[in-house]
Image (tube, rainbow, N blue to C red; front, side, top):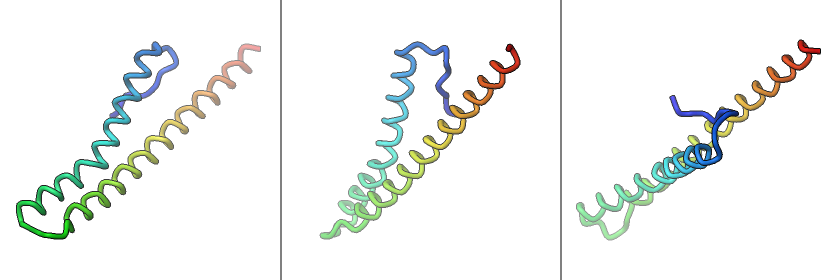
Length: 92
């Protein structure tokens, strides 16, 4: 399971977490295209069909991961807010 932002995390820990996420998504988008390009070079194709397929597949994987990550963060953020509101009401 991927690490999540915690309220008590230091700013540098939050930054490292986001840098890791960004590099992960960039890798998911670029690596399949580079592998496709390499395969095109090995097979001797004039038109880079596998590179195009790889970059398209990488775009789909990267965007899917980005959407899943955003919805997970949104759900965890809204549940923390809701639980915080409930705790405040109990204390009053």
